[in-house]
Length: 450
Image (cartoon, rainbow, N blue to C red; front, side, top):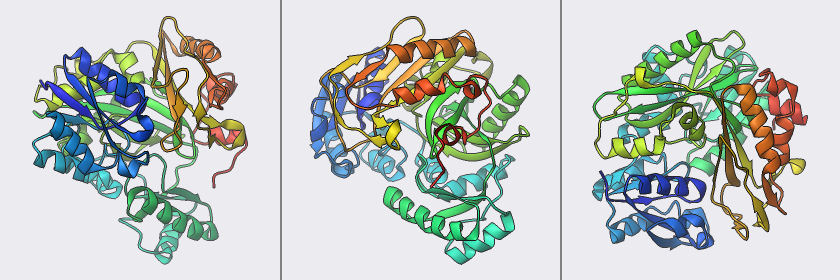
C-alpha cells in the first residue's frame, strides 16, 4: 500500500480522496491555485503546495508544476480525481517516467477510450451494439452532409475527445447540420485541443444509463450495477440515481454481461464507467467509456456499500480485487443532485460570490459531498458545482421523499444556486413516475437545444 499520495485536483473530489486516504492510513498532499488558498482540501491534507495562478492552465493543468510538487513531497502516487488531467494519457505517461504511480487505468486504456471512435470500434468488435454513424472522424461539411443523408435526420455531431457534453450538437436538417458541425469543431478544439468530430444517428427520446466497473491488474473485473443519468441539460448531468427505474432484472443482467465482455476485450484496469443510450424499445447502444471515477459515484457506493475511491487506490497499489460478481449486492435506492452555483432563472448562468449563510441537511440516509462553508468565496475560474446531495432510501419512493426534505433543509445564501430547480424536478409527476428521457429538462423549462 502507498504511504503518501498527491491529489491533483480541487474542490469536493479532492476532499473525498483525502478522506479515503486517511481511512487507509495514507498521508496526503494537496496542490492548489492562488484562488484556492482558503479551500478545505488545502486545510485537511497533511501537506499542501501552491502550484500557480488561478487559471486552470497554470495550475491544475500544469503538468510540470504538479510533477515538481510530487517530487518535492516524495509521494508514491497521484490521484487525478475527475476533470482536469484525469483522462490525460500524457500525464499518466509522465507520472510513470518519474516513477510515480498514476491512480487510474493504464496508458493503453486511456489512449483507446479517450478516442470515442476507437472505443466504439473496439466495443463493436467485442459484440456490443453501437449507434449507427460515421466510420471515423468527419473531415469537412460535405462529408458530414453525405453521412447525415445516409443516416437520416436527426443526427448528432460529437467531439472525438473529452466529455462532459462539450463539442456536441444535434441537427435536424442540412442548414442546421452545417452550422452545428462548425460549432462542434470549434468547441471541441477549445475544450480538448483537437477539432476532430464524428457523427451518429440521434436516438430519439432515450434514457442515459451507465454501468460502474472495477478491474484489477490480474484480470478480475466486476460491474457494480447501473446509474440512471437521464436528467440532464445540454448533455450535462444534473440528477443521477441507482438503480434505474427503467431496468428490470433481465435487462440489467444483459447489460452488465455486455459491459464485462467489452472491458475484458480491451484489458481494462481500475475504475471506469460504460455509458449507454436506452431507446423506447429497451434496446441499448454503447456510447462511450469514462476512464476515471465519475462525479456520480456516491450513488453506487450507497447501494453497494463499496468505497470506490479506496478500491481505486488498492488496485493501483497492486492488490487483487477482493470481489467476485456474486459478492456484489444492491440495497435500496440512491439519488444524487448536483448543486451548482448557477441561476436557473437566467439560463443557468454561473454565479460566483461569497456564501454568507450555509446549512446542510442531515438525518438518516443523507450524504453531502462538498468543499464549501460559511464565508467561502466561490471563484469564477472553475466548474460551478458546489455540492452533491445524496440520499439513500429503502426504495425509490422513500428516496424521493428524503430528497424533497433534504432540499428544503439545504441553505446556500445569498448566491443563486440550482436548489430551486431540483425542488421543481422532485415535485414534478413525470419525474416521480419515472416517465422521462434525455429531453425531459428542456421540456420542463421550455428550452430548445442550441
